[in-house]
Image (cartoon, rainbow, N blue to C red; front, side):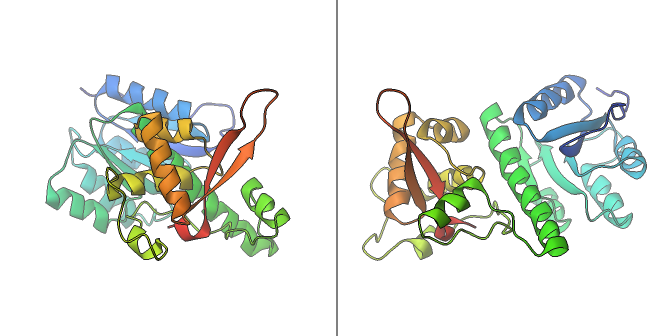
Length: 268
């Protein structure tokens, strides 16, 4: 199904300006709704063909492209090549596609895509990947500000660490979605994962923690698609391994809420 290209809204846009490239109109609307629900993003426009995507990027300010590989005129790989040929290296691309052929994935990786999200996926997975990208984008913005002012803006979790007498993690270090070397970061005495835990899920939980300053076990469970008890098991392991910190938030009544944050050793 194809549709027409839409342009930006007339009011000034805030957040990460995003172009959604998808030929299926219903899927495009779904991605618009998902993106608007994440926070920190603005839908700059939508395009249903590769030609529309390239034309839109040429004529508008765009930070991020959510790109399908299967388009009616030419492939998403060709869109990537044209964007790079036009020297739009500053525009990030996240592939959102059902294409899983090795050659397609390798070509996308060679074009330096920011992420590759395979359809179908859940809303929680979409949110997790976009939140992680948002954190990397914010880190780049902070790095540019540091270059301009020489000052590094601190996050709340870094301020808390300073007040407690600990050094904050570098605020400008980008968050990577590449696998985290858990074995290398694990302290002596923990020679293997506890029974019932898997390394891919450990990495997924670390991604969720990297994406936020602090998270509750419920938030991590939702982001990773895990049961609450399972998420707590992984968080307890990461705390014991020195990859996560835990603090308490006291409310008006009841038990204090546990807040988890990634340590410098857990940052990728």
